[in-house]
Image (cartoon, rainbow, N blue to C red; front, top):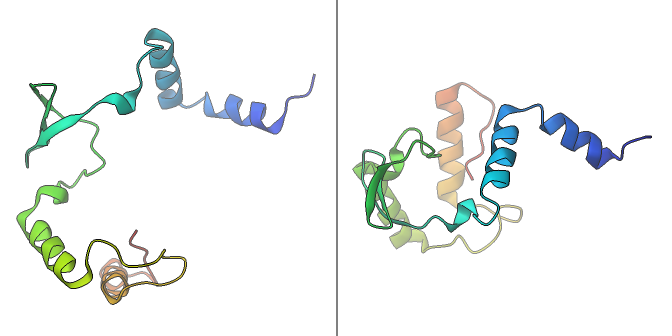
Length: 118
């Protein structure tokens, strides 16, 4: 029997340990949804408060911790005062000067032709 492209994709994805872990978790806890986790507070050292309990976040996508860096937070505040909370359009249509400048600086620092900040 031939498999559909989606079945072939699922078969390949299941070779990844993280995919198998998530499937196993879903089988063990079928009524839980990972996005149901509500974080009430974060600190600069990857700590957070969840349902009144202080825990350490080992799954952060902010692996450099820059989201809590005072210099970054101050720069974001300056950006909000200048640009508001939205740049007015999708990046597919336009970019604000700050994005273009940041991408140019990042590309020079990385020694690459270009970079993309999203």
